[in-house]
Image (cartoon, rainbow, N blue to C red; front, side):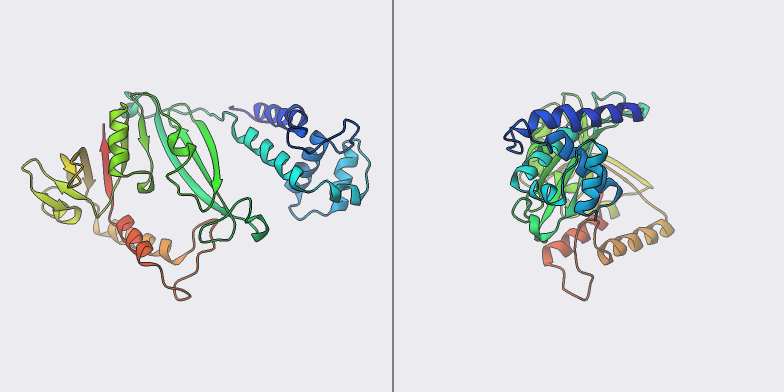
Length: 312
C-alpha cells in the first residue's frame, strides 16, 4: 500500500468487518446484543491509546460514546480479560499481514536478481504482567518482531511475531521461502554455514558480513583466519573466491575494502557505543553494573571485525 488513503481504508476494514468476524472466534462476544462488541471495543482502545497510552476507563468511555455506545466505566473494565487479549492479538496478526509497499527500485547491479530481500528484527520489552503470553529471554517479558523488505518494490513481508526468548533464527521468519534467483541479506545471526549451503541449493544467493572466527581456505588449500588473510592481501580492495569452514568447504566470494585511518577510528568508536548503550527495546545493563557474558563479549568482538561475504 503506497498512500495514506490506502492505509486508512485497510485500518478501517481491520477495526470494523475483521473485528466483527473475529469477535466470536476469540470468545470476546457470546451474545449478539452486546454493546461493546468487537468493532466498538477495538476502535475504542486503539483510538484512545493512540492519543494517550495511559488513558483511564473514563477516557475510554468517552471514546465509546463518540462511537454511539454509552456504557459505564465498570462495563468497560469488565471487557478486559483473556478473550479481549485473544481478540486484539488476532487483529494485530491481521494488521501486520497486510502487504505494505512503497515506490522503490533496486540499483542496477542488483536488477539481475529475482527480488532483493533485506531482513532484520528487534526485541521490544513488555511489562512483567505479559510474561506468560510473551516470555522474554534476558527480560521477563518481551516480543521479538522480524520483517523482510523487498528492495525493488519496497514491499514488506511479515511482520513475524515471536516470544522474546525464541531464537532469531527460528519460526516463519526463517522458514518462509524465497523465490529462486533471489538475493537474501541479513546480519550474521541469520546465517550458519549449513544455512548458507541450503540457500545455495535452493537457487538463492545470499550476502552477509564475514564472522571473524571463520576459517578461510584459499584456492591452494591453505587455511587462514580472516584477519591474517586480509593482512596478507595487497591493494585497497579484496575480491576473491575461496572456501569457508574446515568441514563445510562452502564456496564463497569475499569482498573487503580498506578504510582510511580516520574511518577506522570512527568505526571503533561506534562499536564502543554499541557496547556502552543498551539496545533499543532491551533492558541491558550498562558496563560496570554487570559483566558481559563471555559469549556476548566474543559476539561483540566479531561484529567489530566483520567484512562482507556472499554467494551469488
